[in-house]
Length: 162
Ligand code: MG
Image (cartoon, rainbow, N blue to C red; front, side, top):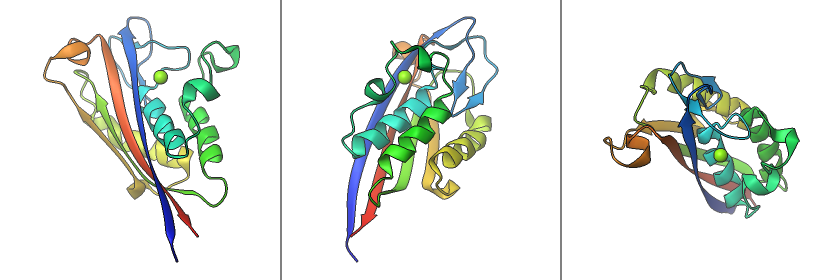
């Protein structure tokens, strides 16, 4: 059996503002600021979706869910991730694994990571061990360090038996 493989990369940034919820991987995290965006601004889920779309050369989430479209206003990004999973798992492709890193100065994200993994594993229909989520600060440097925003990186591997 030969396995065809594709790697994907995703990156996203959202600004932190007052009077918005902080939602990461579908988990609402208590914090004095939240991420600003047309959808729920779940920067982690957006980076993961872009990695998946990137692996299959299907463009990016801006193409599939434009922020000019009222349908995606306040959208639950996990629902969008389900739609992306449908798009990328056509023609025998399956998600091998996803590895993501959130860049945030505060709050402490470690307690919330198990639930984020569970949410994304469910949306992508993959076992928990195939989704890794990590978090780091940038040592008070740059826009994440100054708490102006958060960023997320993600890579994924797509597999197909041929
Ligand atoms: Mg985004």
